[in-house]
Amino acid sequence: MIDQALQQYGVQVNPTIIGSPESIKQAVLSGLGIAILSRHSCKHELATGELTVLDYNVTPIQRTFYTVAHSNTKEVQAFLSELEAYCRLWQVN
Image (tube, rainbow, N blue to C red; front, side, top):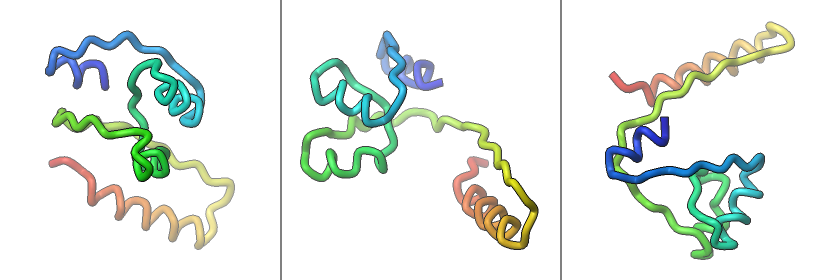
């Protein structure tokens, strides 16, 4: 999905998959390329200027998330209700 979104700008991607966000950040900091990570996982590096954001205006990428719970308690139901409400804020109509 990301490759297709970037192709609209003529960006050709030669992907390498690395397991953890920390490993990905270290690879980028070592000059091995660019990466797509959440801002949250790069908060410190963005604040210190070690990493920067390349701001592409691309079509939003939609993903499906699933919830799994060990039990069906009131607390679990409350959490799922809040999660659903939050997700509705981001839905593209």
